[in-house]
Image (cartoon, rainbow, N blue to C red):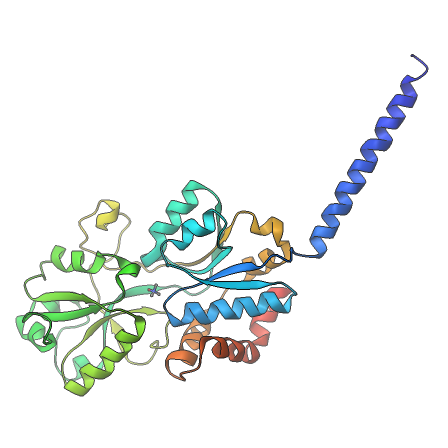
Length: 322
Ligand code: TMO
């Protein structure tokens, strides 16, 4: 027995080495290639997000990855990522989706994959001609909305004699804006209507100008309207906890927000290359504004807009893949 001990130790060392080598070999194989399983990218209901989905899908495909797209609710998507039905989110807007994102993050299964360079604002505003035509003197200060002579210029046939604000689809901000209007004491003069789509917001801008009435709509930046004569209303500043959903009184505007990326926790293991590239991806305000403009101004399809953006911006995205 004593004589066999060195032999036994030797055998263990050989087996351990073999296991270590195989393990290492396996790791090397994984590093050199991502899983062929498709990376599931969600699409929502505003232009830059859909174009960027195809932009990022195109970048993943250029690396040899498979991708698939799924149309998803923009709040529920974070739970879908958490449980692994959707792989990534590439536009987590703080104001509209911060709460859903943080809830999924805290539950586990979803990873914060960093911020884009672009900062965001999602709030009510108006095309500059509204003020140029004298329809609401004092804007962009929100207290201008307390003036009945302002509100009357924003009445529409469906607004019950009050000034109308056209909010985006309710799936984005929930009841935030109606709550704010009431909290700020504007409810007697103003009502909030929800648009069915982003396109309805842009159609409202055209209709109001044609009809010579004032208009206040929900909008956001980065968007195709950046630098095109649109101004956001200055509401009382956002502070952490000011919103009703966070226990506040709701008398505050939207935050100077982040634009984040998120991934399912297994993504870096199943697709280490794509995950590393996605972590490096960071788009600016002008990149994202251009993605939206290709659809909302140039009227391209989202897929064609993405192809054009990729062709025009190789220098921008190729550096993420290196
Ligand atoms: C989520 N959005 C950019 C429409 O505000």
